[in-house]
Image 1 (tube, helix red, strand yellow):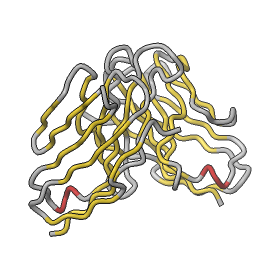
Image 2 (image 1 turned 135 degrees about the horizontal axis):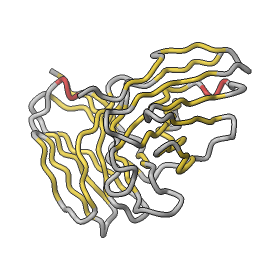
Image 3 (image 1 turned 180 degrees about the horizontal axis):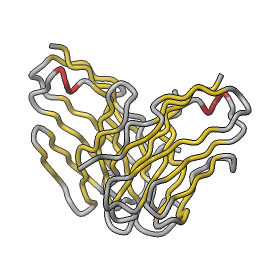
Image 4 (image 1 turned 60 degrees about the vertical axis):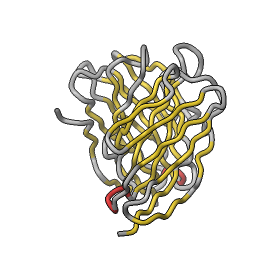
Length: 115
Length: 115
């Protein structure tokens, strides 16, 4: 079963604009990871944010995490056509329990960046 | 550094057949994870192997099985294939075996089509 929801399900923007994707989850986590997937290929790891972190940057990516609201957001600034892909959030549970070791994925956001 | 590799890239099988998928983790990673991405069902956790042992298993029938070899590579076996097994099968590896952050890096996937 999926951990939570991502919204929007699809996002269409022009090159140069910013893209914001949101992810919500249901249970306590150790960390949250964001991935990109191009056209049904493998997942590319973008960024990991730990449960005790609130914000993290990597190049044009900015990720926030609000554990009180059980939500995260991924901001891509100055988007490019090459950013067109599906973006997934995935949560990692703390050690122990039935969710140990696995990542639980959201449904993803399909981002289209028009040149 | 080479990433996670998977073989074959594509497979076409018929119902009732058996299939074996292969995965080589990133050098130095001891944990291997398998996920299924079926159309409309999202990314679902299948299996986690660490140091040759199965550590966790997703909600899949026993005809999905696998193993991890001493060199940490892994195989996923699916017996008695059904049409709904058609999916992209993704392998991931991590360095810490879920002990700390469980940052997982994915391979390009194997596309399985069951006719």
